Image (cartoon, rainbow, N blue to C red; front, side, top):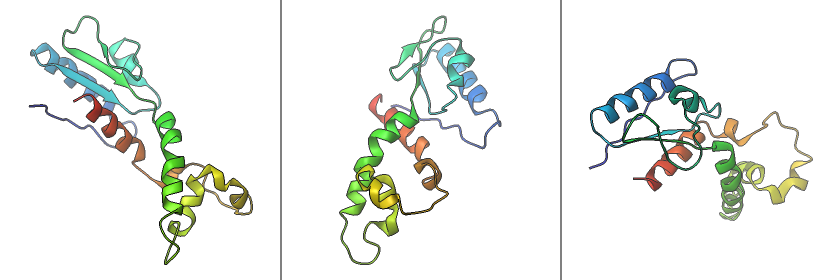
Length: 143
């Protein structure tokens, strides 16, 4: 049975250090471990001294330990147009288009957005925790 350990918290609290150390410890104990990071800084590669990317790579010197660093911005850029379009198509009653959020996520609505003055620069600000949700989706593909 697969087990899932999540390491979370504010920036600088030691998520990468703790998750990497735990992954090495578990692999040394004979378990097969996949360490998935959604950190845009890609510091897990530095922590494990191995070049990680979107495909699991075995960590040299630690049998049973695999690492993967996803690119949340790339996954987000593929997902947002679909989400925006779906939100805009969800009926016209009430908040149809979720009060304009669907428009912000749908690139086909860029002309309509040109007239909107907004401090919102990225969908990441609109949807906190989305990069973690995308990481969870990526993790499920490898379980």
